[in-house]
Length: 299
Image 1 (cartoon, rainbow, N blue to C red):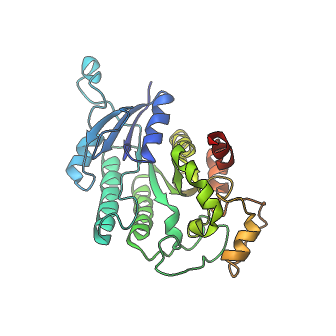
Image 2: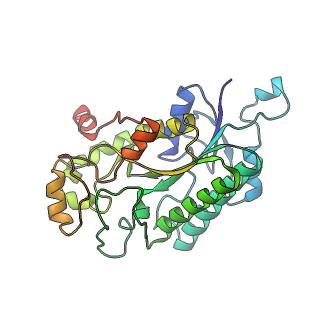
Image 3: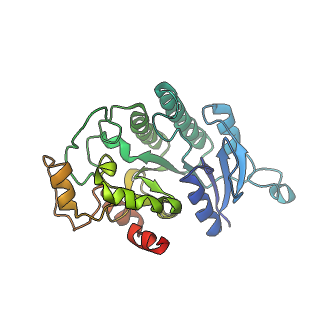
């Protein structure tokens, strides 16, 4: 039987790749967003995630009109991938970033719990490590950044993501459902590879994100693998490429920009500083899109 998945925020930069990947792999997908998808890959139900009633109604609705031909009752949802959010600070006021992201996630998890949905993938963020949107230069506690790191952000966006992880853990404790939080690195669209000449010339431009990146298509694969992997309970996983988005060796980057930060383990020449070891170990994820290949392919 075809698995039915609801994706929130599927019209956005990252979410669109999740929808496209799931549809390509035979999933039946309903997108919840404020605007329809540009390509119309899946039906969009216009939904305000801060409205608990709308979210509950959306998670219990039909995904396509075809269902009316078979059975008037909506079939159950197998999984939710929750990406809908204000994507960073400086888009709207800080209090709105916090309110929308925190309440939206609570509403999605609450509706999923009440409807008996046993799998939710929640988009968290590398910003939880407290460096990306810090109000001043801030050294991380150590590299590489891993899921055991004592997260301590100071901005409204990253703080909302930390709270969302706590909320996810609480709902897992309540229901026993699998809820996987993905701390996602800097998401790249294929068009973004055109920016690499500028980024390579000045590594400081990507210092705050520790030169992390993840192609949106590789992120989508991680989400699908999360749907297909049962039994992990509540867990947090970084999602990042295997390599840094720089042509300078990691040792040089650290010496230049983070000379006082301890390094917990030996690193490869260009190895990511946002550890993806847990993602690979638990989900069997493998990177398919590397910046060097993508940039050379556009030249």
